[in-house]
Amino acid sequence: MPKAASTIQSNIIKAGTLIPGQQTPASDSGARVIAVTSGKGGVGKTSLVVNLAISLAGMGKRVVIFDADLGLANVEVLMGISPPCTLFDFVYGKKSLEDIVVPGPGGIRLVSGGSGFLELANLDKKRRQKLIDSLDYFDREADFVLVDTGAGISKNVLGFVAAAGEVIVVVTPEPTSFTDAYSMIKVLSNYRVHNEVKLVVNQALDRGEAAATYNKMKMVVSQYLTINLQNLGWVSKDSLVSQAVKEQKPLCMYFPRSTSARSITLLAQNLLVGGETPVKYYVGAGGFINRLMRLFGQSGI
Ligand SMILES: Nc1ncnc2c1ncn2[C@@H]1O[C@H](COP(=O)(O)OP(=O)(O)O)[C@@H](O)[C@H]1O
Ligand SMILES: [Mg+2]
Image 1: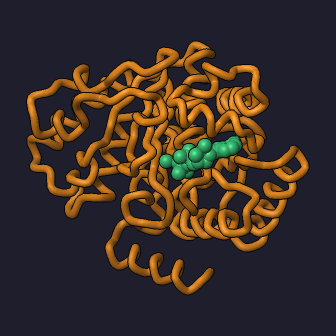
Image 2: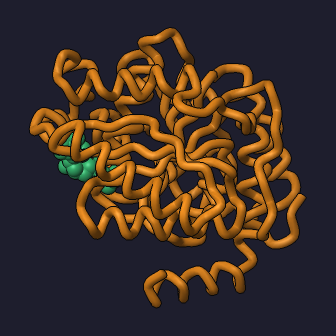
């Protein structure tokens, strides 16, 4: 591991963010909460979250996107909508969950994290309980909750990834993206955050380049780490993805016949059927928030 990454890792241990051996409990009910993350920024996480959500919705699934990345090119921007309220307004204000879950394109729904998540550690008991109780809503109302996280090995990103039941790591064939994705997977493996990581190779020139990237990652992961790497699929480098972003129109709705949109549909199908290896670990939305607060909070609940 590069020196910088190992320093960050030891900071994580000091901060008590991740406790070795802590794993997602298995549960059969509730929404599948899937964090989408990457080692490096700009690899296509947000585009993937939006289009995966729309594809899953097209397959009859009820999907909520949790925007946990406070960056600029966030989910709202990509979908051309701007939620009037965020989770913060629900926790601290008088807004109901129905007020903060806004409809998006293709039948999906969106919750903007705002600064709500960052405040979780400081919530008093009453507000925590309000949040936990209300999150049953997602277990009832959603089949999938896709969490768009920021990039990189930071306390916030790892908190979201650890709290979710499943994780997708997005990588591109670029060497820097590859190395950073490996560092992320290594942290998840070393701290036994998850038993399994689903890899998506984005912006590959062709199937061969995607396969080479996956195989290389599979090789180093199986040689050095104890985590199972699942190949969820790949998405080609396609100028229509950038065009869709610029026009704030989701690719899967406006260019559904493009190769990139079709490959994202395949990814959605792989998620539904379990891909190479069956999905073993689920955590409902209520469990997600509980785990988030345990990971971000001081004393737990
Ligand atoms: N498959 C792709 N082909 C071409 N460009 C892509 C692809 N996926 C993402 N991009 C471009 O990469 C940029 C970053 O994408 P984004 O989804 O915002 O990444 P992240 O959320 O990881 O920072 C966007 O401008 C987008 O147009
Ligand atoms: Mg993003």
